[in-house]
Length: 238
Ligand code: NAD
Ligand code: ZN
Image (cartoon, rainbow, N blue to C red; front, side):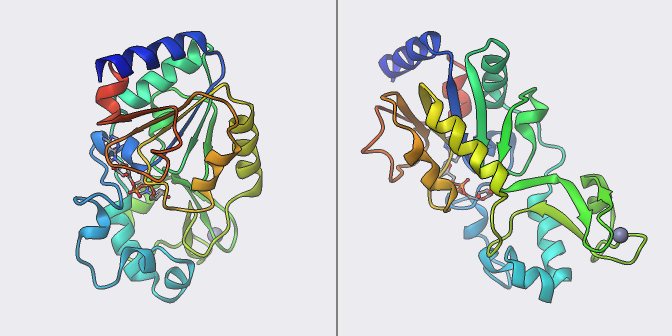
């Protein structure tokens, strides 16, 4: 492991165009559960499977149940950035890192100071009325009860991409462009099971593809450097 960390450190020092592509595993050390780990949300018991609750159809048919799950499991507003978020923000400030592409919806990269973040799946910090488009912050969703309603009577919908919904095309294209242009791509904390996000890795054509993940992923065989472990602990050593 020490040898791998030294190599990653060397590569990071030589690079001025790192892109980081991450998922829920980046935030588990901040106390936010991921989906697919054994202690993740998919292994807990609910009346409906999480994929179903977090779908567009379910949101429209059963918004009360959706918001019960959403408030309890998706709104982690007390969470703080960890060493991985902080290192990435530091690299951006030093001119080494060009952008972060994230599947997370927790806003922790920005909380750590990162500026260029492509949020493929949106953010719990933004919410809009489905009828008049008025903006609401996350606290107002947390404080509301049942289905949150706007003053105009419309339902307030979190700006997160639900199953069956498409990704924002400008965000997706921006992510493709920075990944295609990167001299080093670090993929971390993601099972690479959710498409189209997972397919973004294919746009990288360089020879410094780094994978930092606790469990194995479909990318293990293809990466130029694989580090298995906790991403916060690993990045704190860089
Ligand atoms: P996932 O749950 O499918 O996979 C998480 C991966 O991270 C696993 O492979 C696990 O081994 C790894 N991991 C967990 N903790 C780690 C750590 N400390 N260090 C290194 N690796 C670690 O997550 P995914 O691939 O991001 O896909 C799930 C979807 O769920 C995403 O689309 C995302 O929008 C959403 N989600 C977001 C959050 C969040 O915003 N924090 C939390 C849960 C789910
Ligand atoms: Zn409204």
